Image (cartoon, rainbow, N blue to C red; front, side):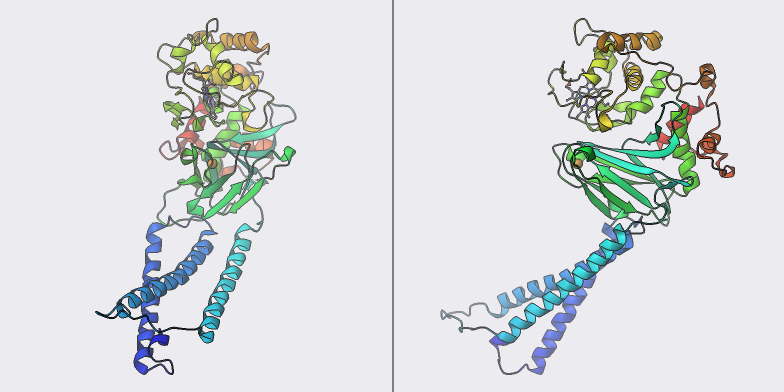
Length: 473
Ligand code: HEC
Ligand SMILES: [Cu+2]
């Protein structure tokens, strides 16, 4: 600006104008900043304040540059516009060393400063913490799988599963992540297909998932955060999980929910204890078992099923499936057809759809693994989806194993998960939930867990409530 008027010195008037300009830039940038809280979700993690501070610094500096450039542009357009009748060229300018040094050094300092604080915050927010993923005194592995187009969450415990020899209890909560305030959460994330990005805006954390199974050279990625109390929030609180990496045509539907409990006690009462109980004492009715089991898979990303709130569009709607299943393939009963749809989806394609459904089976890796017992319960559940089911509903404990046997030559253990006193599991768990955990964990902190029944709030977390209901039946 000074170049054009008087090269020798800056007049007092000029200095005042520059001063006013700088003040306006800072003011404008501060005004920008004041809008930020209204467009951001609440800060729900210990990491959030760091990230927002960094964002504010970037926005403030960026705002100053924005107003500087736009301001100079507007001033130049007005002050140096063509005067009437003036067709001459403007004066020729050669370089200005001082100016060039100044406008190189200042941005360099700013960039180095930003690099340093960004790195410090990234370091802080991703550093391992003490006592990660503690649940009832023992660490649990939080494993997340992102597959086109659904998230699944698993909690791998060190408690032996009484129903599966040599295996530990693994709780699966489908597209819902359960955490509690103060828990140092560490997610270990994998994807069998393409790059996805796990993003919880309220926690201000985001991390890509890299394709490939670990056995095949894939690299699991990690994400850490610690939920904190949000003022005026009702707990359990829910925040969206979003896929932030364009992963295909269902990318926009690839969402989940993180449920934050007020404390570990509430987490155990409303989610973990009932979930463990459902594994230790699965309901005798295969339909109930299937309803829980089916939600451990990524079906929701591709299918519509109203009772479970699924809204996927890659595959056919499963509403009323049992009404059609008996007529799909000549010579196959409804049970046989549904079982084949899961273990052998590519053999018969639902008219109008492509062969996009992953094969589920006892030997499939990762989230597509489905044992004969899981198949049995899922078929039992899907058989109830319709008004005039083609399935033999009265006789499902015999008809479905027979169908599985005839199609795949595999026997189903229908007593799977039920101890010798199977009749008693109609009346509910053999043990109250808190006792189950104590037995398995050897934990003696049982006082706080006496109120499971009353704690489940069906409005806030229908799924947890369902689990409680099932195990209490
Ligand atoms: C990646 C998307 C995808 C996933 C995940 C998926 N499916 Fe499918 N599904 C499809 C497609 C596409 C079809 C139609 C083509 C075919 O028949 O294989 C289909 C067909 C079906 C059918 C036959 C429906 C009919 O009307 O004939 C059933 C039943 C079914 N799926 C159940 C499931 C269940 C249960 C799960 C979860 C365990 C699941 N699917 C997971 C895409 C998917
Ligand atoms: Cu995705």
